[in-house]
Length: 129
Image 1 (tube, rainbow, N blue to C red):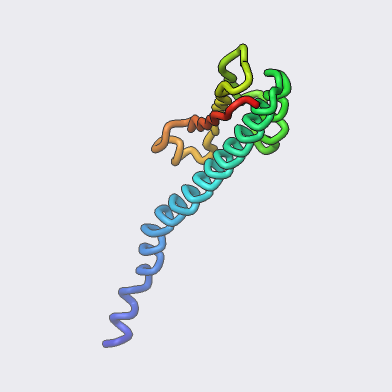
Image 2: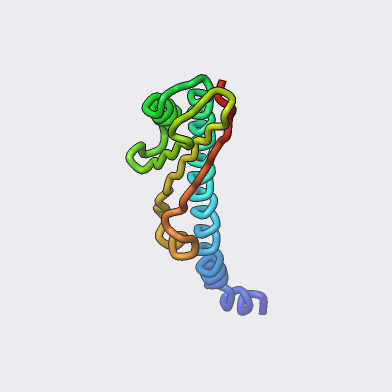
């Protein structure tokens, strides 16, 4: 009787694995994608901070953009959008550096759930010395 019950369960593990494995891979690849987006956001925030420091000591727009690009080593520099306001700056005034960056998702299933590309944005306001 025990042998007869065991013969009926021969494909059970295969069916369970077929049901659980796609969900496991979706979760795994989702964690990987969110890790990429999180790393890009941290890099973007640090790059904006570097640009804000350069702007605060009286740097011109090209030097501010250069410091942002130097700090964003991981990111695609052609995709960075850097906005520096105001254009004419005086001592004691606030200067704003804002950078946006689109992150392309590489896993197709996840890009169907989350809008692709994920647009990240960071800005900083500092007083001009």
